[in-house]
Image (cartoon, rainbow, N blue to C red; front, side, top):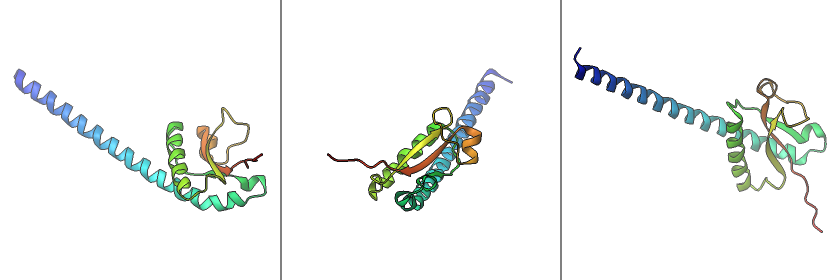
Amino acid sequence: MSESEGLLNKHQLKKAARKQRQQSERQAHRNLDDVTGQAIELAFQLAPTVAAATSLEDRDQPIDVELASESEAQFIRKRINDALKVDEWLDEVRIWVWKASEHNRAALTDQGRSKGFELRIDKAPKHVTP
């Protein structure tokens, strides 16, 4: 094999690896979009029950979707808040990321127990105006 053939093969390998990486990144974005959509849908389903809740169990509900990381959970939390803001739910509910390392409450999902974090929706604290 000549030097130019070796360089050509090296270039082709790099090009193939770049193409594979781009396809993987596109798939990861599609997966994140899907999970975000599921989480938003769940939040809208849970919001009326959580907002009207009088018991502690009903006030704090999991948004049980498969999360890859805490940073993904934070990203999805922001997207849910954007959606809830449009429908004016943010005065009544809040979305947050429960972390085993920071919160005393127990996990509400299998994912929370295994990964140590989960998305939750709970009743927003009432603001008292003077």
